[in-house]
Length: 273
Image 1 (cartoon, helix red, strand yellow):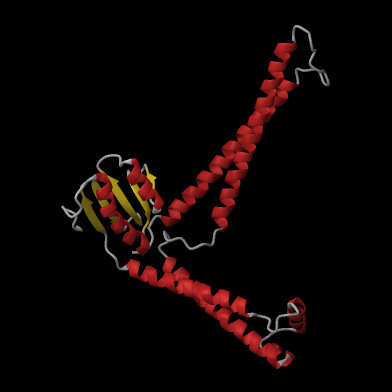
Image 2: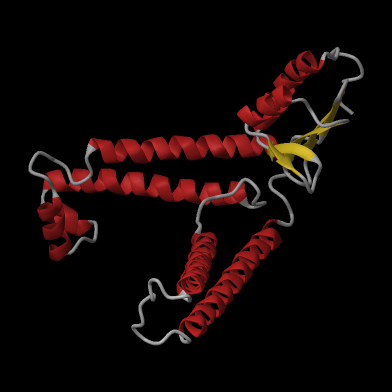
């Protein structure tokens, strides 16, 4: 199994939470701005602080409170802008998540596009060497041919230089590797290993590799986990990272180190269930 069944639900929930946070922060900013305006309205327009007057101290204090409210309003507006940006990023994100159950198919579609682009760039280069008629045979208009020529640096001999083909080829190799990894991951079964101070779970349903400890692990163990990409998830009571082939391999290799740091004896009762 690839990804997690609740991927879309979690994505929508995350976007909704960002939208709610933005709405709340905007409301708070407007409320604080209104409060600051009302507080400032009691001071006659243009009236300076009366230095030496018995009201000087209280006047300075009151104006300071107005400044604080204005600052809080500004900070709330910044917070709202931050969450609004998070909403847009989440909605427009086209990256393929390892939590998406359709990830392998999305990568296959991406690979097909990349390979098509690669062949098209090669065809453009070949036709360019043969002349405008060959380019027109590929469907390019006179205007498009003229634009290609005008955009080419003087030192380039082809519309699609070697670096462009090389970058696309590298991306093709990366995507092929991803597809291979997901294919291997898709047939793996859930695994559980116990050790002296806890257990390691390769959790298929949540698509996570998780460490559970009988007690809060020592600082050295926490540092070890963090350095290998594991993060504490309070809602799960586990140190975890997304389930990948590398994550599984890394987690298994960490067990002996955790045992060493905890003084345990790896090898006792640690067979997979």
